[in-house]
Length: 132
Image (tube, rainbow, N blue to C red; front, side, top):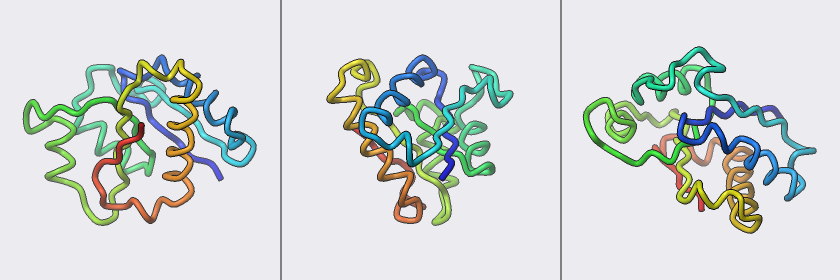
């Protein structure tokens, strides 16, 4: 199974930790997960959240972010509230991205991520999922 995950610009430097976590729990042999940055898909770092959400929904990518704000109507949360449907993929929000260097935390994140990846239909339409 191959899955593409777009990392919000605040998490781009954490891609290695996500990959390490998957390897540490043994799922790197069962899943092919491609972690992409905004620039890898042609989006600027200052791309509005609304455009990022629409981009990942159109391409059926998962999005991992640490962004929880609702500053304005183009914010990620406002976009989810306004545009989410029963078929929309969830936005995965990591609670403590600075803790990804800690093995136990990283492995907890990886385990939850695998659960989301292997059962996507269970999470359609949820809007946002929080991982440790």
